Image (cartoon, rainbow, N blue to C red; front, side, top):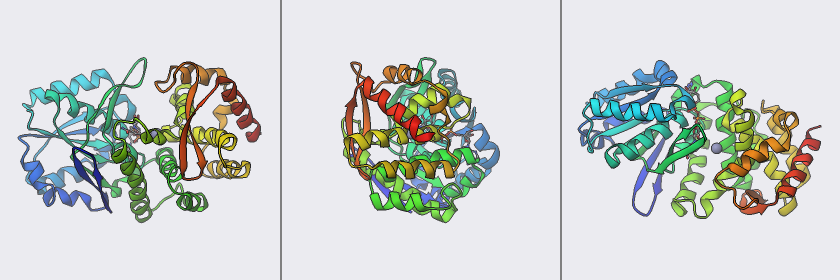
Length: 362
Ligand code: NAD
Ligand code: ZN
């Protein structure tokens, strides 16, 4: 599948499928050859499994890239790795006319994007995402690294020149990472399209998707993201909808994510929380929330953190989160499925909803 991200100043194409790397020697040959140097920044684990496929595709396009391997997953989004990448590019004589390729999941994409955004004030880059979750992160131009004080605290908006999403690489994803990515996919359905969301909730193979199924569904998810980003590139309004499930979900991630829960698994919990809020401010029914929770548990997601931690632990984090202001917290809720809106919620109501979620899990 293919779609175009259309922004006021730039546009770029996103290709999804098993043969998309062939485009390096057709569609994108000119782009590659216009660069004086091409560099791959690759997630260590992804490189160990799949780098030859990417290198072969680039060789077919007449390109022999420099390869910088960075730590797998979130550990690459540090200031130290960021600086290391910049120094590497200088050592390898990269210039303002060079091009980077991100080869890994959302973490590697965020790092590479931020390196590209800032090396010599900005060079071009291509996203080659390798996780289901990165159907979300590779599109839209948000790039960042973490600080000890918080996630994504230093970053910028920098759009890629292209996104080539090779679904053939997804076969090696561990179950936890599949669940993580599928949570963002269903989030895209919940905020955009009731029929699609209900379809996903009936899917018996939700966390064991085939490549063919993914090629179709990921394009739908990317389209939701691309349309929202086209409307509101810098998150003044509707781009906030993409944070559905994330206000509480990020807090869960901060409190217990590093003990083994992936981002999407935490977001699934956050969406459960948001559905109860949505019952109070929209038309979501209690029985729908139950259906969502049952579906989640059936597919290997857990709500344990809600039972094992106090609200205070989550609140402490939410108050620090960059979306909080003046004691109230902003949540994305659903008027109904497919119709998101943003609303301020008091600490008292956060508490009521938390207790309610606990009760529903008993
Ligand atoms: P990740 O990049 O941390 O990768 C997770 C793990 O999967 C890593 O260990 C990695 O080595 C491994 N992996 C990656 N591809 C694999 C493959 N094909 N086979 C086997 N293993 C593979 O995780 P992620 O969920 O893709 O990304 C999470 C990151 O994305 C977070 O840092 C988050 O902040 C960021 N993010 C950014 C945006 C954005 O708009 N920029 C949006 C959502 C998330
Ligand atoms: Zn997310």
